[in-house]
Amino acid sequence: QVQLVESGEGLVQAGGSLRLSCTASGISIRFRGMGWYRQAPGKQRELVARISRTGDTRYVDSVKGRFTISRDNAQSTVYLQMNSLKPEDTAVYYCSAENLYSDDVDYWGQGTQVTVSS
Image (cartoon, rainbow, N blue to C red; front, side, top):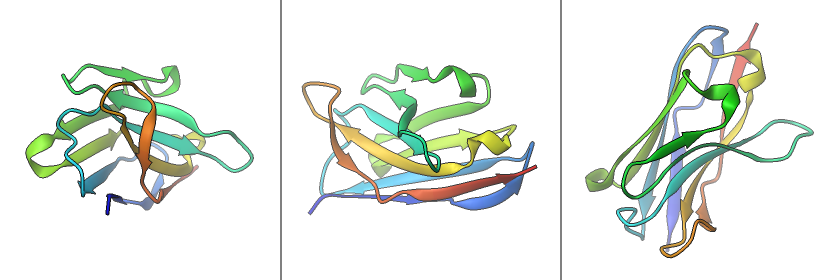
């Protein structure tokens, strides 16, 4: 059974930091692109950050310079370091694991809540 388990949820003040973790079981992430998405109330889910199997990264413009995605293949874990958080970063954050042969998402985590107060 494949599971992506996120942790690190929290409530922080604007300007603060959080680190989210996503640990996979039942699959190897070594050859998969991995991503973090978020969905705020009343909005569509959006891709926040993605890291390819070779370590290339990309970010949505709104988080560039503030968020960093990284991966530890040996620990089957992907991280999202979030600094200088803003109230508009408030959302449920989801980890994703992509297909081995494309960037389609094969697996999702259950989501973890991040709330940033002003």
